[in-house]
Length: 113
Length: 113
Length: 113
Length: 113
Image (tube, rainbow over the protein chains, first blue to last red):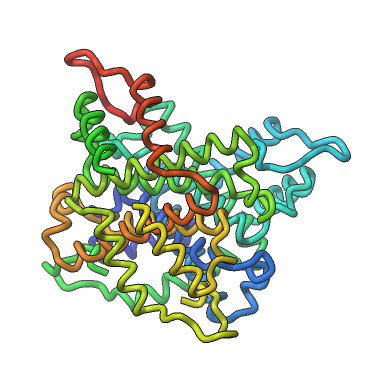
């Protein structure tokens, strides 16, 4: 990850895009790209969505949008000085307390949370 | 990253959330969390946004939402069988051709793309 | 609609929120609220989603998020001087040419567009 | 609004898109289109964003995305049986109690809410 982060920093610097890469703009761009990933799925049935990678054109779009989301997430984190892996590790620990392992047979729909 | 990915897989399995973790649902959840990250910034001036991490409560929310975005991105990638770091490396290479380094003094606003 | 638009203008003016209600901030807020509407559905099966209004708490959230999306859309349109009903009427006309009525039996998945 | 709503219903029926127009899919599509509206603004300075309608190409995109957001909002509301104008009127009334008119000189940043 650190190697890719460094390449993204150099990529933006060489194109003089840093003035545009404010935390607010990068948060907006991340949200826009996450929307573009969702767009691939919006009209698909659950079955079509599960088979998305067997269609070469859709598979390419999925990889492309995943890359865009990750790029903006990493650039956002660079702009605000957050280590995303550290943030995720801390969150998993909080969630292990917040969502205890359920008893057998309990309702486990995450939608109720 | 692989260690965190594995913990997320085990976390969801222990709570029997896998049936909900379809590619379509995870793409929606990723987009929702990216919106929650953007929400922190929506009314901030560029100056307030640049100083977001000096406010402890906002800094905590930023780390929390970054973790949620990364968690759903990793879980989405697991569900569709994409390696996000590989996808990002391939995208950076494509972008190095698509956006050549500009001449001195050229207009560099990425908004025109 | 014009009556509600006027109430939103007065509401924001009385609270001195106009300086925050820039086109960019309102576009961000609209996107955030659309994400909150989607959040209600993210883990629901198609069947649960179809019955969303039979759960009083979810029905209230749906109405609340619909109102927020419409409020920010109307406020955005006021900020940029666009009449949303006129924009929609013009778009429907363009779409009637772009998507001709399909022949009997043709594949009609909008996801291909 | 009712005339446009009716045209959208007929438009989708003639193209046999109704099976795709589930509440969940329409909420996703609404969120995707709100992201496309935000995309126009993501790299713009506040000054550029304020002048967005003086650029004919951007002005066209703004009107187009506003129409898409409103179309999916109206179609979503039709699918769940919600009157969006009624929902907005009720929300404005709730907000008039939730956000009392501030005293002269009070901090009015909506970002604190």
